[in-house]
Image 1 (cartoon, helix red, strand yellow):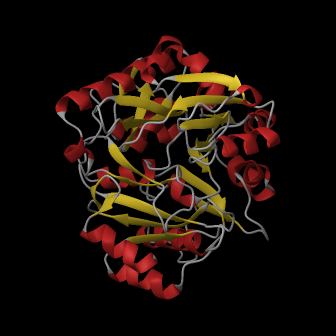
Image 2 (cartoon, rainbow, N blue to C red):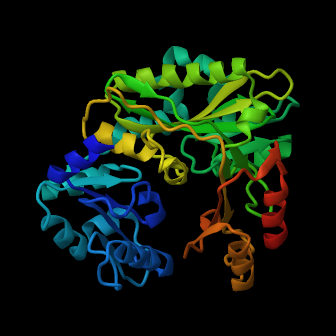
Amino acid sequence: MLALKKALESSPIVYITRDIERALGLPLTTENYYIVSNHNAFAKSIAQDAAQRAGLCPAGSPQILLIKEKTKLDTRELLEHPETIKFINRLKNPQILVFKNTPQIEKICRAHGWKLLNPKAELANRIEEKISQVEWLEKLARYLPPHTISELKDVSWKGKNFILQFNRAHTGLGTVLITSKKQLQELQAIFPDRPVRLTQYITGPMFTNNNIVWGKKVFIGNINYQITGLRPFTDQPFATIGNDWALPHKLLDAKQIKQYKKIVNDIGKKLARDGWKGLFGIDVIMNEKTGKLFLIEINARQPASTTYESQLQQGTKNSTTFEAHLASLLNLKPSGITLAKINDGAQIIQRVLSTKNKVSTTKIEKLKKSGLNIFQYANTKPGEDLIRIQSQHGIMAGHNKFNKIGKQIFSILK
Protein backbone atom coordinates (compact mmCIF):
# COMPACT_ATOMS: atom_id res chain seq x y z
CA MET A 1 0.00 0.00 0.00
CA LEU A 2 1.83 3.08 -1.29
CA ALA A 3 -0.14 5.54 0.84
CA LEU A 4 0.91 3.71 4.01
CA LYS A 5 4.57 3.65 3.02
CA LYS A 6 4.46 7.38 2.30
CA ALA A 7 2.75 8.11 5.63
CA LEU A 8 5.41 6.16 7.52
CA GLU A 9 8.08 8.52 6.14
CA SER A 10 6.86 11.27 8.46
CA SER A 11 5.02 9.15 11.05
CA PRO A 12 7.15 6.16 12.11
CA ILE A 13 5.32 3.45 14.06
CA VAL A 14 6.82 1.60 17.02
CA TYR A 15 4.93 -1.59 17.87
CA ILE A 16 5.47 -2.58 21.53
CA THR A 17 4.54 -6.22 22.15
CA ARG A 18 5.41 -9.01 24.58
CA ASP A 19 5.26 -11.56 21.71
CA ILE A 20 6.99 -10.43 18.52
CA GLU A 21 4.73 -12.58 16.31
CA ARG A 22 1.90 -10.09 16.86
CA ALA A 23 3.88 -7.37 15.07
CA LEU A 24 4.85 -9.36 11.98
CA GLY A 25 1.89 -8.32 9.81
CA LEU A 26 4.15 -6.01 7.79
CA PRO A 27 7.33 -7.10 6.02
CA LEU A 28 10.27 -6.34 8.29
CA THR A 29 11.97 -4.48 5.46
CA THR A 30 9.27 -1.77 5.71
CA GLU A 31 10.99 1.55 6.38
CA ASN A 32 10.07 3.41 9.58
CA TYR A 33 8.25 0.42 11.08
CA TYR A 34 9.87 -0.56 14.39
CA ILE A 35 9.29 -3.32 16.93
CA VAL A 36 10.14 -3.57 20.64
CA SER A 37 9.69 -6.99 22.21
CA ASN A 38 11.18 -9.52 24.62
CA HIS A 39 14.46 -11.21 23.82
CA ASN A 40 14.18 -14.96 23.21
CA ALA A 41 15.47 -17.46 20.67
CA PHE A 42 12.54 -16.97 18.29
CA ALA A 43 12.60 -13.17 18.44
CA LYS A 44 16.36 -13.19 17.92
CA SER A 45 15.98 -15.33 14.79
CA ILE A 46 13.37 -12.89 13.46
CA ALA A 47 15.70 -9.92 14.01
CA GLN A 48 18.61 -11.74 12.37
CA ASP A 49 16.47 -12.72 9.38
CA ALA A 50 15.30 -9.11 8.99
CA ALA A 51 18.91 -7.91 9.06
CA GLN A 52 19.95 -10.49 6.47
CA ARG A 53 17.12 -9.49 4.13
CA ALA A 54 18.15 -5.86 4.42
CA GLY A 55 21.84 -6.68 3.92
CA LEU A 56 22.73 -5.45 7.40
CA CYS A 57 24.79 -6.71 10.35
CA PRO A 58 23.87 -10.36 11.09
CA ALA A 59 23.53 -9.55 14.80
CA GLY A 60 20.09 -8.06 14.19
CA SER A 61 17.99 -5.34 12.61
CA PRO A 62 18.18 -1.71 13.80
CA GLN A 63 14.40 -1.63 13.43
CA ILE A 64 13.92 -4.28 16.13
CA LEU A 65 14.79 -3.79 19.80
CA LEU A 66 14.77 -6.94 21.93
CA ILE A 67 14.79 -6.39 25.67
CA LYS A 68 16.76 -8.98 27.63
CA GLU A 69 15.63 -9.43 31.23
CA LYS A 70 15.42 -12.34 33.67
CA THR A 71 11.63 -12.57 33.25
CA LYS A 72 9.35 -11.93 30.30
CA LEU A 73 8.05 -8.36 30.35
CA ASP A 74 4.47 -7.41 29.55
CA THR A 75 3.66 -4.50 27.23
CA ARG A 76 3.56 -1.92 30.02
CA GLU A 77 6.92 -3.06 31.39
CA LEU A 78 8.47 -2.99 27.93
CA LEU A 79 7.13 0.51 27.34
CA GLU A 80 8.66 1.77 30.60
CA HIS A 81 12.04 0.10 30.08
CA PRO A 82 14.96 2.57 29.77
CA GLU A 83 16.17 0.94 26.54
CA THR A 84 12.71 1.37 25.00
CA ILE A 85 12.48 5.02 26.03
CA LYS A 86 15.88 5.72 24.48
CA PHE A 87 14.95 3.77 21.32
CA ILE A 88 11.69 5.70 20.83
CA ASN A 89 13.07 9.14 21.67
CA ARG A 90 15.71 8.94 18.94
CA LEU A 91 12.87 8.91 16.36
CA LYS A 92 11.17 12.00 15.00
CA ASN A 93 7.40 12.05 15.57
CA PRO A 94 7.15 8.45 16.86
CA GLN A 95 3.72 6.84 17.10
CA ILE A 96 3.12 3.96 19.49
CA LEU A 97 1.07 0.86 18.73
CA VAL A 98 0.25 -1.96 21.16
CA PHE A 99 -1.67 -5.21 20.86
CA LYS A 100 -4.18 -4.33 23.58
CA ASN A 101 -4.47 -0.89 25.12
CA THR A 102 -4.83 -0.23 28.88
CA PRO A 103 -5.22 2.91 31.03
CA GLN A 104 -1.66 2.36 32.30
CA ILE A 105 -0.28 2.35 28.75
CA GLU A 106 -2.19 5.54 27.98
CA LYS A 107 -0.72 7.19 31.08
CA ILE A 108 2.86 6.23 30.15
CA CYS A 109 2.47 7.59 26.61
CA ARG A 110 1.05 10.88 27.91
CA ALA A 111 3.93 11.24 30.36
CA HIS A 112 6.49 10.89 27.54
CA GLY A 113 4.58 12.94 24.99
CA TRP A 114 4.17 9.96 22.65
CA LYS A 115 1.14 9.58 20.40
CA LEU A 116 -0.68 6.29 21.04
CA LEU A 117 -2.50 5.02 17.95
CA ASN A 118 -4.80 2.50 19.64
CA PRO A 119 -8.42 3.49 20.39
CA LYS A 120 -9.25 4.39 23.98
CA ALA A 121 -8.88 1.57 26.52
CA GLU A 122 -12.14 2.53 28.25
CA LEU A 123 -14.13 1.97 25.05
CA ALA A 124 -12.34 -1.32 24.29
CA ASN A 125 -13.07 -2.64 27.78
CA ARG A 126 -16.72 -1.62 27.58
CA ILE A 127 -17.13 -3.52 24.33
CA GLU A 128 -15.19 -6.64 25.37
CA GLU A 129 -16.38 -7.21 28.92
CA LYS A 130 -19.31 -9.59 29.07
CA ILE A 131 -21.72 -7.47 31.13
CA SER A 132 -21.10 -4.01 29.69
CA GLN A 133 -21.02 -5.50 26.19
CA VAL A 134 -24.74 -6.29 26.34
CA GLU A 135 -25.50 -2.71 27.34
CA TRP A 136 -23.19 -1.33 24.65
CA LEU A 137 -24.78 -3.44 21.93
CA GLU A 138 -28.24 -1.99 22.66
CA LYS A 139 -30.57 -3.21 19.88
CA LEU A 140 -27.76 -5.28 18.35
CA ALA A 141 -27.93 -7.57 21.41
CA ARG A 142 -30.53 -9.42 19.33
CA TYR A 143 -27.60 -11.08 17.57
CA LEU A 144 -26.56 -12.78 20.82
CA PRO A 145 -28.07 -16.13 21.85
CA PRO A 146 -30.87 -15.83 24.44
CA HIS A 147 -29.21 -14.49 27.60
CA THR A 148 -29.71 -12.88 31.00
CA ILE A 149 -27.45 -11.05 33.47
CA SER A 150 -27.51 -11.81 37.18
CA GLU A 151 -25.40 -12.01 40.32
CA LEU A 152 -24.07 -15.56 40.58
CA LYS A 153 -25.75 -16.21 43.96
CA ASP A 154 -29.16 -15.63 42.36
CA VAL A 155 -28.70 -18.16 39.55
CA SER A 156 -30.69 -21.37 39.87
CA TRP A 157 -30.27 -24.73 38.18
CA LYS A 158 -33.25 -25.54 35.91
CA GLY A 159 -32.10 -28.90 34.60
CA LYS A 160 -30.59 -27.64 31.32
CA ASN A 161 -26.94 -26.99 30.44
CA PHE A 162 -26.05 -23.32 29.99
CA ILE A 163 -23.02 -21.07 29.46
CA LEU A 164 -21.86 -18.94 32.37
CA GLN A 165 -19.47 -16.07 31.68
CA PHE A 166 -17.72 -13.81 34.14
CA ASN A 167 -17.35 -10.19 33.16
CA ARG A 168 -13.75 -10.55 31.94
CA ALA A 169 -12.33 -13.45 29.98
CA HIS A 170 -9.41 -14.28 27.71
CA THR A 171 -9.31 -16.99 24.99
CA GLY A 172 -12.37 -18.70 26.46
CA LEU A 173 -10.91 -19.12 29.97
CA GLY A 174 -13.66 -17.06 31.65
CA THR A 175 -16.40 -19.15 30.09
CA VAL A 176 -17.86 -22.18 31.87
CA LEU A 177 -20.34 -24.78 30.61
CA ILE A 178 -22.64 -25.52 33.55
CA THR A 179 -23.86 -29.12 33.38
CA SER A 180 -25.08 -29.79 36.94
CA LYS A 181 -26.52 -28.18 40.06
CA LYS A 182 -23.43 -29.23 42.03
CA GLN A 183 -21.06 -27.48 39.59
CA LEU A 184 -23.12 -24.28 39.83
CA GLN A 185 -23.17 -24.40 43.64
CA GLU A 186 -19.39 -24.83 43.79
CA LEU A 187 -18.91 -21.61 41.77
CA GLN A 188 -21.53 -19.78 43.84
CA ALA A 189 -19.66 -20.66 47.03
CA ILE A 190 -16.50 -19.00 45.66
CA PHE A 191 -17.93 -15.99 43.73
CA PRO A 192 -21.44 -15.34 45.14
CA ASP A 193 -21.59 -11.61 44.37
CA ARG A 194 -19.96 -11.60 40.94
CA PRO A 195 -22.18 -10.53 38.04
CA VAL A 196 -22.39 -13.14 35.28
CA ARG A 197 -23.89 -13.47 31.84
CA LEU A 198 -25.99 -16.59 31.39
CA THR A 199 -26.42 -17.75 27.80
CA GLN A 200 -28.35 -20.56 26.17
CA TYR A 201 -25.98 -23.40 25.31
CA ILE A 202 -25.70 -23.79 21.54
CA THR A 203 -23.64 -26.46 19.82
CA GLY A 204 -22.09 -26.10 16.39
CA PRO A 205 -19.07 -24.74 14.53
CA MET A 206 -17.53 -21.38 15.45
CA PHE A 207 -16.38 -18.77 12.98
CA THR A 208 -14.41 -15.55 13.32
CA ASN A 209 -12.93 -12.83 11.15
CA ASN A 210 -10.78 -9.69 11.32
CA ASN A 211 -12.45 -6.44 10.29
CA ILE A 212 -11.39 -2.80 10.09
CA VAL A 213 -13.27 0.37 10.96
CA TRP A 214 -11.72 2.95 8.66
CA GLY A 215 -13.36 6.33 8.97
CA LYS A 216 -17.06 5.68 8.41
CA LYS A 217 -16.39 2.53 6.38
CA VAL A 218 -16.37 -1.05 7.61
CA PHE A 219 -14.00 -3.41 5.79
CA ILE A 220 -15.19 -7.00 6.28
CA GLY A 221 -12.35 -9.50 6.46
CA ASN A 222 -12.02 -13.15 5.49
CA ILE A 223 -14.17 -15.56 7.50
CA ASN A 224 -12.29 -18.43 9.10
CA TYR A 225 -13.34 -21.48 11.09
CA GLN A 226 -12.31 -21.10 14.72
CA ILE A 227 -10.64 -24.24 16.07
CA THR A 228 -11.74 -24.51 19.68
CA GLY A 229 -11.07 -26.77 22.65
CA LEU A 230 -9.46 -29.75 20.91
CA ARG A 231 -7.02 -31.97 22.77
CA PRO A 232 -4.03 -32.30 22.99
CA PHE A 233 -3.74 -28.63 22.03
CA THR A 234 -5.62 -27.40 25.12
CA ASP A 235 -7.32 -28.76 28.21
CA GLN A 236 -9.85 -25.90 28.25
CA PRO A 237 -13.05 -26.72 26.27
CA PHE A 238 -13.69 -23.12 25.16
CA ALA A 239 -10.11 -22.02 24.48
CA THR A 240 -9.45 -20.77 20.95
CA ILE A 241 -6.53 -22.72 19.48
CA GLY A 242 -6.49 -21.90 15.79
CA ASN A 243 -8.01 -20.73 12.53
CA ASP A 244 -8.77 -22.38 9.20
CA TRP A 245 -9.56 -20.14 6.22
CA ALA A 246 -10.48 -23.05 3.91
CA LEU A 247 -13.32 -24.67 5.87
CA PRO A 248 -15.96 -21.87 6.04
CA HIS A 249 -16.57 -22.18 2.30
CA LYS A 250 -17.64 -25.79 2.92
CA LEU A 251 -19.76 -25.18 6.02
CA LEU A 252 -21.54 -21.89 5.27
CA ASP A 253 -23.97 -21.30 2.40
CA ALA A 254 -24.56 -17.97 0.65
CA LYS A 255 -27.45 -17.02 2.94
CA GLN A 256 -25.40 -17.66 6.08
CA ILE A 257 -22.43 -15.68 4.74
CA LYS A 258 -24.79 -12.77 4.03
CA GLN A 259 -26.13 -12.99 7.59
CA TYR A 260 -22.58 -13.10 8.97
CA LYS A 261 -21.58 -9.99 7.02
CA LYS A 262 -24.67 -8.10 8.22
CA ILE A 263 -23.69 -8.79 11.85
CA VAL A 264 -20.16 -7.51 11.14
CA ASN A 265 -21.38 -4.42 9.33
CA ASP A 266 -23.91 -3.47 12.01
CA ILE A 267 -21.33 -3.82 14.79
CA GLY A 268 -18.69 -1.98 12.74
CA LYS A 269 -21.04 0.94 12.09
CA LYS A 270 -21.76 1.25 15.81
CA LEU A 271 -18.03 1.11 16.57
CA ALA A 272 -17.44 3.88 14.03
CA ARG A 273 -20.12 6.06 15.64
CA ASP A 274 -18.37 5.63 18.99
CA GLY A 275 -15.03 6.74 17.54
CA TRP A 276 -13.38 3.35 17.03
CA LYS A 277 -10.51 2.99 14.54
CA GLY A 278 -8.77 -0.05 13.16
CA LEU A 279 -9.19 -3.74 13.80
CA PHE A 280 -11.95 -5.59 15.59
CA GLY A 281 -13.01 -9.22 15.44
CA ILE A 282 -16.22 -11.09 16.04
CA ASP A 283 -16.87 -14.72 17.00
CA VAL A 284 -20.01 -16.36 15.67
CA ILE A 285 -21.52 -19.80 16.29
CA MET A 286 -23.77 -21.69 13.89
CA ASN A 287 -26.55 -23.65 15.55
CA GLU A 288 -25.94 -27.12 14.15
CA LYS A 289 -29.68 -27.93 14.34
CA THR A 290 -31.15 -24.80 12.73
CA GLY A 291 -28.21 -23.28 10.83
CA LYS A 292 -28.87 -19.87 12.44
CA LEU A 293 -25.86 -17.73 13.33
CA PHE A 294 -25.38 -16.09 16.74
CA LEU A 295 -22.85 -13.51 17.90
CA ILE A 296 -20.71 -14.92 20.70
CA GLU A 297 -17.92 -12.40 21.17
CA ILE A 298 -16.50 -9.05 20.05
CA ASN A 299 -12.74 -8.50 20.18
CA ALA A 300 -12.13 -4.76 20.41
CA ARG A 301 -8.45 -4.97 19.44
CA GLN A 302 -6.16 -6.65 16.94
CA PRO A 303 -7.22 -10.33 16.91
CA ALA A 304 -4.38 -12.83 17.25
CA SER A 305 -5.00 -14.29 13.78
CA THR A 306 -4.29 -10.95 12.07
CA THR A 307 -0.58 -11.59 11.54
CA TYR A 308 -0.90 -14.88 9.69
CA GLU A 309 -3.89 -13.72 7.67
CA SER A 310 -1.86 -10.71 6.54
CA GLN A 311 1.09 -12.93 5.63
CA LEU A 312 -1.22 -15.12 3.54
CA GLN A 313 -2.47 -11.95 1.81
CA GLN A 314 0.98 -10.58 0.98
CA GLY A 315 1.92 -10.67 -2.68
CA THR A 316 -1.60 -9.85 -3.90
CA LYS A 317 -2.55 -6.54 -5.51
CA ASN A 318 -4.98 -5.68 -2.71
CA SER A 319 -4.42 -4.56 0.87
CA THR A 320 -3.58 -6.91 3.71
CA THR A 321 -5.60 -6.75 6.92
CA PHE A 322 -2.66 -5.36 8.92
CA GLU A 323 -1.90 -2.69 6.31
CA ALA A 324 -5.52 -1.51 6.43
CA HIS A 325 -5.39 -1.49 10.23
CA LEU A 326 -2.33 0.79 10.28
CA ALA A 327 -3.70 3.03 7.53
CA SER A 328 -6.96 3.55 9.43
CA LEU A 329 -5.08 4.41 12.64
CA LEU A 330 -3.02 6.95 10.71
CA ASN A 331 -6.23 8.53 9.32
CA LEU A 332 -5.37 7.84 5.68
CA LYS A 333 -8.18 7.93 3.12
CA PRO A 334 -9.81 4.53 2.46
CA SER A 335 -10.92 5.31 -1.09
CA GLY A 336 -10.03 2.66 -3.66
CA ILE A 337 -8.90 0.13 -1.03
CA THR A 338 -9.95 -3.53 -1.13
CA LEU A 339 -8.92 -6.22 1.35
CA ALA A 340 -7.20 -9.20 -0.26
CA LYS A 341 -9.38 -12.32 -0.26
CA ILE A 342 -8.03 -15.69 0.85
CA ASN A 343 -9.75 -19.07 1.05
CA ASP A 344 -6.93 -21.34 2.20
CA GLY A 345 -4.37 -21.63 4.97
CA ALA A 346 -4.58 -22.49 8.66
CA GLN A 347 -2.80 -22.22 11.99
CA ILE A 348 -3.16 -24.13 15.25
CA ILE A 349 -1.66 -23.45 18.67
CA GLN A 350 -0.38 -25.90 21.22
CA ARG A 351 -1.15 -24.21 24.51
CA VAL A 352 0.62 -24.75 27.81
CA LEU A 353 -1.30 -27.44 29.70
CA SER A 354 -1.54 -27.92 33.45
CA THR A 355 0.50 -31.10 32.95
CA LYS A 356 2.73 -30.00 30.07
CA ASN A 357 4.78 -26.86 29.37
CA LYS A 358 7.16 -27.99 26.63
CA VAL A 359 7.24 -29.82 23.32
CA SER A 360 10.27 -31.99 22.59
CA THR A 361 12.85 -30.94 20.01
CA THR A 362 12.16 -34.20 18.15
CA LYS A 363 8.49 -33.28 17.70
CA ILE A 364 9.36 -29.74 16.60
CA GLU A 365 11.73 -31.11 13.95
CA LYS A 366 9.07 -33.54 12.70
CA LEU A 367 6.61 -30.66 12.31
CA LYS A 368 9.18 -28.58 10.40
CA LYS A 369 10.04 -31.50 8.11
CA SER A 370 6.33 -31.74 7.26
CA GLY A 371 6.60 -28.29 5.63
CA LEU A 372 4.90 -26.44 8.47
CA ASN A 373 5.92 -23.06 9.85
CA ILE A 374 6.67 -23.23 13.59
CA PHE A 375 6.81 -20.43 16.17
CA GLN A 376 8.03 -21.35 19.65
CA TYR A 377 7.26 -19.36 22.80
CA ALA A 378 8.92 -19.26 26.20
CA ASN A 379 5.58 -19.18 28.04
CA THR A 380 5.03 -21.45 31.05
CA LYS A 381 1.61 -20.50 32.46
CA PRO A 382 -1.32 -22.85 31.64
CA GLY A 383 -3.36 -21.48 28.74
CA GLU A 384 -0.55 -19.43 27.16
CA ASP A 385 0.87 -20.14 23.68
CA LEU A 386 3.56 -22.83 23.59
CA ILE A 387 3.99 -23.36 19.85
CA ARG A 388 2.13 -21.94 16.84
CA ILE A 389 1.90 -24.20 13.78
CA GLN A 390 1.08 -22.66 10.41
CA SER A 391 0.11 -24.31 7.14
CA GLN A 392 -0.38 -22.83 3.67
CA HIS A 393 -3.41 -25.10 3.36
CA GLY A 394 -6.42 -25.91 5.51
CA ILE A 395 -6.05 -28.52 8.26
CA MET A 396 -9.74 -29.21 8.97
CA ALA A 397 -12.06 -31.58 7.05
CA GLY A 398 -15.14 -30.56 9.03
CA HIS A 399 -16.30 -29.31 12.40
CA ASN A 400 -13.87 -30.76 14.98
CA LYS A 401 -12.47 -33.08 12.28
CA PHE A 402 -8.91 -32.88 10.98
CA ASN A 403 -8.00 -33.50 7.33
CA LYS A 404 -4.79 -35.27 6.29
CA ILE A 405 -2.53 -32.36 7.28
CA GLY A 406 -4.34 -31.87 10.58
CA LYS A 407 -4.13 -35.57 11.41
CA GLN A 408 -0.38 -35.46 10.77
CA ILE A 409 0.02 -32.56 13.23
CA PHE A 410 -2.18 -34.34 15.77
CA SER A 411 -0.24 -37.59 15.50
CA ILE A 412 3.03 -35.78 16.17
CA LEU A 413 1.81 -33.87 19.22
CA LYS A 414 -0.47 -36.39 20.90
